[in-house]
Image (tube, rainbow, N blue to C red):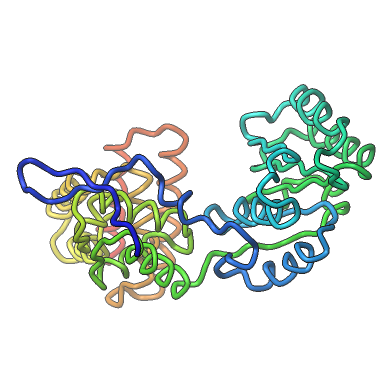
Length: 337
């Protein structure tokens, strides 16, 4: 019989509020390669390595939340069993990106013998594309020197930032954003296990917001469940600092039909109601732009270029209020012609 999830009670509403002491992302992370959802091409190849308990250096490339770290940990568990961490060094290269870290931590671990009679040890470098070129050069030499006793698994968002000598020594796996059906299936499964009620339109909102990032989807589910075990669509948008599509469409319509001042008021309402930063608004607006049936193809092209310019200015430190007002003014001007 399944245990009910731990809850505490909200004194005002007398409803259970789910504790956040355990992250659902970790709780429901696949333990073996066969449990990994999606990424069928990568999983098929990794299963062969898991059965043979032998593999070359690996390079996992793809967007965040697509299962790269999960695949590395699952493969280690399949090869070594539950004691796999005794023969595993896990490092986040964005924190240890300098040459000295590679020469000390990685090399010291690589030069020691594997434990429990294992044939080799695993060194997992997450976000390896953050390593400097000098650090990658040192890493390449270590990969050559300790190839008999160590296997490297490198994870990155952009394989183009990994130097060619390292890429040529690795079997490359491409991880793609998960299909919407796989994300929806997983969050429905998690919500059932955790005993929360997830409205169908709330599930659709999570899928839309996550954009193939399963980690982001499960986190959004848990954050909403911490407020109320009955999760609605509006809760998802409120807790993820995301404006719903109809609100963004309303802003674009106001720019076209109501003029600058009305559109500017609607913009401020969007920012205040959903807690959006300037770059968040521009990126969400850009994604929704192509669903706007009332805009011509030419208008969408012009607005895409405009949003790219405003986003660059914001990232470079431009004043948020001024840049967003300029965006609104330019959209109004473009759509009124």
